[in-house]
Image (tube, helix red, strand yellow):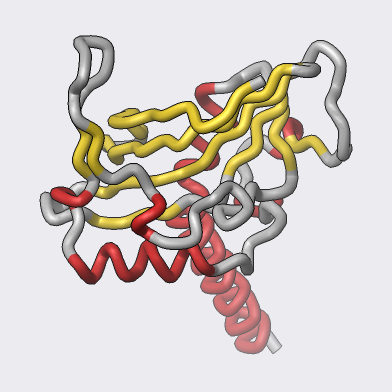
Length: 179
């Protein structure tokens, strides 16, 4: 009987560790943005759709941005990724399997907003399912869409982050829509 309990406990622990590993890899960027950088905001429970936002393929992403003024840095996603990485990103852009945030992977469950409308005097962030890829330089990059809604104001941004230890550094941001 004790042996059976040990086996059962081991299986539960392995399942828990596998879930944590999956959550860590898949939700690391979302947890950073939702739980650490936007402290007083709410998080929409639904993922933004890459496709509905106009990104159906890798070629739809702004991969090369030249420095036209001193206000923007040059950015070249193509130089960071090889052909295999681009194909993986293409597949992820076409996949719509992730519609809702997995609450067991979210570190700040109390910030999850399940209402369909806006919440007065609160900012609500929504994110696409992040695309995480290792670049040619062996650095980890995360590409994500972020919408920010405050009452009647709306902004949609494309952001690219680079993993730095336990944090993420923003390396590129572009406003795609606003009102």
